[in-house]
Length: 260
Image (cartoon, rainbow, N blue to C red; front, side, top):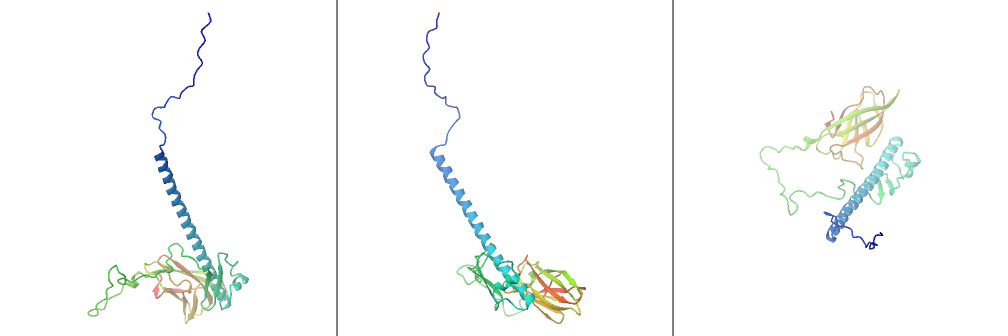
């Protein structure tokens, strides 16, 4: 016996899942706002990093030009009248492309146009205000003029070490490098390094400083473009001497402080 026809199936409804819930409009707005804030922080951070990197690269170019000019002076006995002399003499492989550079032989300083922006930690353009001169902060104190004289502890933080390296030698002389490092807590500013040459040894020339000799003492005055030696930093001075390399230079000092 045939079965009765069945009714056609109607549209099926999905059963609601227990525990399932979607985002409400308020929750979506909160997510959008949070993502926007995070994106802004990333953009600001990347922009600041790029600015600091560009400033550091600019300052490195200025230092490179000044170092090349000092080497030019060590070889020729004079500073270049124009920047092209450094590239023609291969003291610089090429003129830095980060800006327009000029060199002033009178002041022995390279300048860049436009000027470099302050790099990471830069304090260029800022002048510290002495205590007591502003509207806030403690007033400056003046030591009493009676009784025992006041003692100063300014030099207590001045310490340095020195390394002497003979880089090359020949029968009539040698080339050496002396590196002075500030291992104290105070800044040498401006700094001057000195060392003693053995009897019979004379200075030929030097670079990365203004290097002169008086008697057996060689004096290296800081270049105009790097006059401070801050704690934790070092500076290397190169020079050529006439005479035997042994014994090496001794009694290296910075601003009179012995560098052990």
